[in-house]
Amino acid sequence: MIVTADLANAVSKVNPIFLEGTLKIASAEAKSIGLRDGQIIQAVIENRGDHTKLLIGNKEFEIPKNFHTGEGSKFQAKVSILGNGSAVLTPAGVSLPGGSTPSTFIPLSPHFMNLLLHSSGFGNLSSIYGSGILPSIAAKGGLADLISRIFGLRLSVNNLTSSEIKNFIMNFGLFNEALLSKRQKLNPNNQKVLITQLIRLLNERGIESQPLSKALLDIEASQIETNQGLQNRELFFSLIFPFKEFGNWDFSFSKIKSPANTNDSFYTFNLHTKNEILGEVWLHVVVKKRNSLSMQMWATSKTTYDKAILKSDKLNALLNDAGLKISSFEVFNEERPGNKVQESTKSNLGEKFFSGSTVDIEA
Image (tube, rainbow, N blue to C red; front, side, top):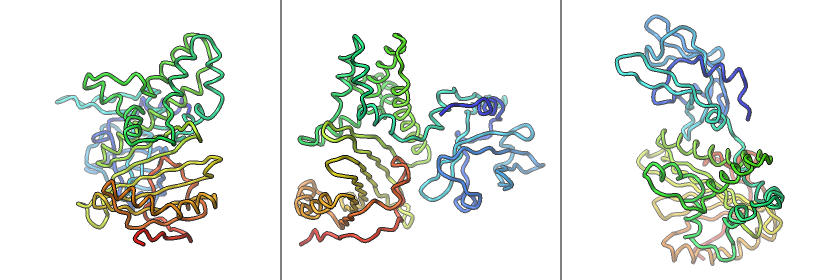
């Protein structure tokens, strides 16, 4: 997404109004003004005597007193909707405390603003594996080895192991900065590192690199999303697994507190793929009490649907050997309800399931 001049001007003028970089709006109030996840809003902060007001459209909210100095401060922020329905506003800048002196506002760099506004999921990253972009670049002298290493990151579904999945996640880019901050070296076959190197070489040679730059944005925006979740005491990350045989798996993982019991957390896993072999498939898994799995699967292909039911006993045996128990397994020969929503967004655990087959894994 391009950062417009209006947005850049808004960044330079906004006052330091946020505590720890975010401002939270309760669920009912967020719903009343129709705030949506990923939405960019414009708002105003005003001091009115002993009160400080947040104005969004024609709606006013009371916020902590003297959150800012000045009158009529306009700002833009990105909306993130949490699992409990409340909204978090992320500003287009950060406020640095100055001790006894007023806080100093530091505008975000255009690149960081791009990351906050980026919302394409992993479509760009997926395209560089599935299209002819990389092979066409490989034909240009001196880059074939680097591109071969990027293609070499793809997994093989025929001999996939848990250690390969773990290594791929660790080298996806999610943990790069954390490792560097601890003065640890990155794996040379790190996906983000390799794509960055390729972009740099292309730019040095005057070769078009925009598709790869957009793919890199996908990875870094995912890192930002994960970090924002951690700041709100939630765990969420997403990535894609590219396979040699049939394209990609879109994957997301989250840890969410149970609404009924705040001390009871459960884990959610989502997988999605679309290819000529399997058709389109979604898998939704909720893990409670460490080893109890509730699973739902949607498959548009009747053949894939039938195979899932036929091989459910084998799946149950494999998971039992790993110390996991399937409490329920539902299979549907249809699209997943709500699949039009971007795959990297958090799943709605209260979604309605349509007609399908419940597999008796105890039989």
